[in-house]
Image (cartoon, rainbow, N blue to C red):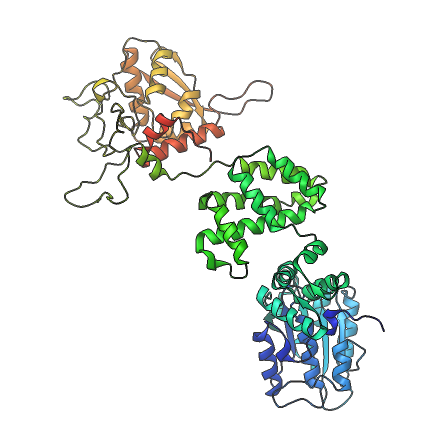
Length: 593
């Protein structure tokens, strides 16, 4: 006698036997019992979760002569047997829309639907699988009969991609009762597999069933098919080693070994690790999926504790949690993001050399810089208060710190005022960052100019404007000290090449920077005053917007690059946190991302 697949042999015969989809099965059962069955249903959900099964159970219940008062079919009568097994039945027709998707097939279905059932108390049920494959013309042919169907005719459409129906035949959705099927949980699949194994006379370890359930990815049919495959090579008992060997799964100890390599900065061991996987016959794509799952589990353990993953074995949970202590939560997030990119762009599936992609991914993970809290870094330099003594900003006894880039109104005289100096001289705003112990006291940030700029530190806290120098020296001093430079414009000024014609200085800048300088409140005037003081003559600055030059004639000066953008961003961060300037200066830090 030929073997019958477990997925077919153990297909549910009643509403109560359908796992996880109680919100659908209970509704349909009550509709049958109360004689409130709709004329058209749309079953949506992933593959292998019970859409076609419930459609058959509904057809069995409507046509079962021994149906109970609760709406459950008997499941053993000739009518139920034919419908359940998918055999030919006069009143129940299953159609594969993938091979009958055209308008002619839809018209034929519509014509057959007008014929009455074989008996007076029976229903004609049309089950259309893969309904999203129907063409727009086919849906239009069915539109009228779905709106006003003949008596005792019911349509059931099953699909894994309801969005395609929404795009091609949106009016269909308003003519059907829609039910969304859920993915089956790992625990639900394990429970059903235990039931099947008990009826088949086999045994299995809990860990082996967990591996099968995770591999099924929420589909009961896939789980039963994998179970059938594993049983074919076993001796009646399922063990973890056999399941891993059949499915090609990588041992979880290998992922723990990889975490040790990454945390220990053993960059060269990455190549040997990947080579070992290949020598043992593992599929690198399968290894990659296990790596993503391991990083996700590690992040959950760090964020929610050991109880976050209850189905994980206790020994593995402890080992994984121990390894993750070497990483900050931010490190795990960045590692998971890097690993996920490989799947999201589809390069691993398309590549003919997955080994190279996996090795590059592991190298990037091993070279990933560790995350350091800014507060901790500043605290080590003496530039931030201790966590137990936070500053009380806003209270009467503790005035708030001034914002960097916006000095107090009385901190500097206005340029050009009778009692003020001829050049912009601004006192350094007060900061509450304490100097580091054992280091000479240095300013945390450069003092702020009248236009939101930061001149360089000089004796007495003021930036003295040089006088009687040429344009090149004056511009170099302006760039170095940021005197007269509007906030965020220093990268553009560094690459600019101004020229002088008499009392006019021509300043070429990128179009956006030029527009910003000319539109700023007093920014251009301040720059003219600083240049005039340095050149000992009244100066007028004319800003020119640069345009892209033709290929082969050189590139425009002042081009915005990644380095200039990062430099601008770093300066903005320093303005938000003045004490960060000392950390950048002392440790020679740079912004990477």
